[in-house]
Length: 143
Image (cartoon, rainbow, N blue to C red; front, side):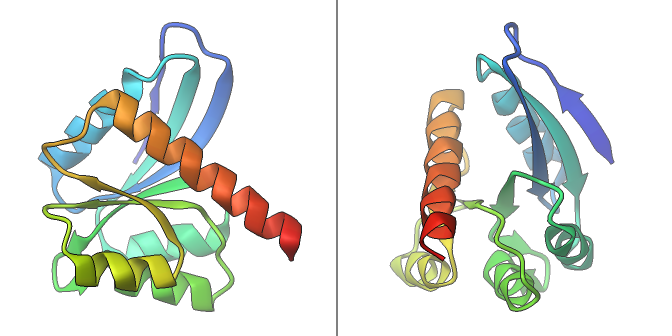
């Protein structure tokens, strides 16, 4: 499902992939994105591991907000599969709690920022997106 979320002063249009299996959490994330000034996010929301993988390997988005828990699979498994298929999309991971093991595993495969659900606001999400995109650009320049 594709949804556009506009801020009051659109400056940049950013294609964003949201991989979240819980509709309530997707609604919250979209609301936070709409509170980020100066950016219009064109959000493609997918709910499953398979749909997320297909979307990530298409390389049509500038950023991915990825839930860690995707039913029987994890966001880490999804990102690993996407990386193996050539995706270099910057990723911000959402998680229910910041387990050091999860963070370490995710960082190893390219997660640039982590946010804890229920403890995130628009400013934190904006900062995480910016950091993830900037880090990915730096890595691409080095390749």
